[in-house]
Image (spheres, rainbow, N blue to C red):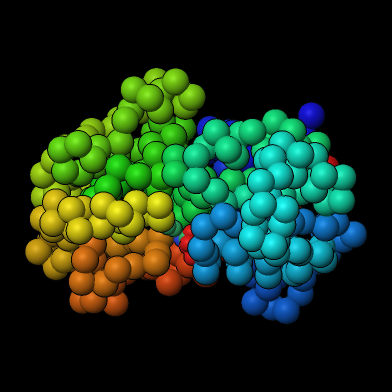
Length: 304
Ligand code: CP
Ligand code: NVA
């Protein structure tokens, strides 16, 4: 059975730490122009049923830097787009490829693909989770000198895929996690606890953004309308307005608190330009690190 990376709970704390170490080494090697073909001879396919800039390009470059061959497979160019089943597609792609990176809608669709796959499958975002993003973001925080186990991490906005994966990470690493979301848009801890071990977690969910931000070492936000939610855009933009990450909210956090966003940002909605481009922001470091952390993830899951 291949080992898949479908959820943040598919990686252990110890493995996470080794991914951070490896990502740091791979980053230094890339900067020095010294790259080693650790995945030489492998072919890895990317199937993206939703748009992507960072995840797709960073994984494609990562695959090439590691000496493997990357194939971007637009689902509309595959028979999948004409109704071939996910399970047949998975079996067939497994017979050509050494791994698949999949971005899709329901987590169940990803799981169905993985169940039929005979090669490792990596979750490149579903409606439920975005585990590779969270690994990369935690690496960015570590690189910025944050003690992950001791930080207060605040998330302001929609209880979406990004938050869900951070919830799993908080339980694993033991950091204080405060989430502020409007009523009805909070993450569903009860549902998550069925698949993620949340036993050790210090997670609070509130509706007041200032309360979540208070004394935080890190403030994180994400779009108010995730991919697939476009029909609710108008309503969401009204409901989420008090949850904007602006200078006033930033002033509730610790002095020098770091500001993060997985991007793409909808500037003027969930984050203001002053904050996104201000001295506390590490959003572009986050984006770059998807390449380096992505390589470490590929090595961990695709090497065997
Ligand atoms: N952060 C992130 O996943 O960005 P993309 O949608 O551009 O891949
Ligand atoms: N929550 C966002 C993340 C994009 C990287 C979405 O799912 O669209």
